[in-house]
Length: 402
Image (cartoon, rainbow, N blue to C red):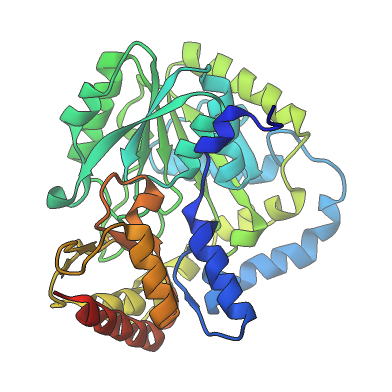
């Protein structure tokens, strides 16, 4: 008899899976590896904002005891004001929960919502935190298609087709990881109408909402539907380069009759782990007041802007490769001609790429995409490094071409 639960056979993360382990082995042997597998800005020289350093230095002693199970009140007040400013009608500070990154909060939220056998609608491709969390609870992720020919927007008809009596919630990731898509108002309104007609709770993962390019606007899902219960998740890992702090939060909005019992249930789960990391909560007020730090990375001349530009310019025109420019975040999700490049599985292709060039990327199947013709490139190294790496990638493709 196995010591492990049967569901563990379904849990996997390619971001730190076999490809990553092979990269570590190569590095241990002295080989150079460029890790474009994880959206981890600090490993590529992105600094912590001075405002965060100052807040830590000034307030560190406040983090010694356990704090409020929902999070420090001054931090929750700032987060409440932030979401109110985006048009989200959060009832009160009691409906704001701070946790150890979205990863912890996602599992907490789904624990409150899903019984074994229940279903969660998730996009394909998806950041697999969500599909793995559902499986860990004995629930089932049901995938809906995001259409590459329509800027990677969700296929609403496919969502409707996937709804069953066991469907409990609709997950929206906007801006999207791995595609970098940014959904306009009309798309969000269509998704909300599906939730309205089928009495679904909406989960909106908006961790990249401040990392938007070219003057575009991020619209918070919950701002468009006061009549629907929406749980909005966000954090500081990406916008302020502090992934290791594990600083995330979720806010509840919608009809009081639904929000109140959900808030109470989440309060019970939050109490089980006593509190989130108090040290990281100290920086939230300072970080949320320092939007200039994030904006300068996104504008012409800023690192994220220039790195995105360098990557797309280097890949533009490569035969058998196409991509939809990312409107947000720092990922590119190109498509490859499987026949031209002799791709049997994307896992094998990415392993070959790693062995021949020392470049580590994650295949599309690592984001639960059913086809084997995509991969995700993390555009975090400096522009010159990315330009050279994409040149190596193009040469690798040329060697494989039929």
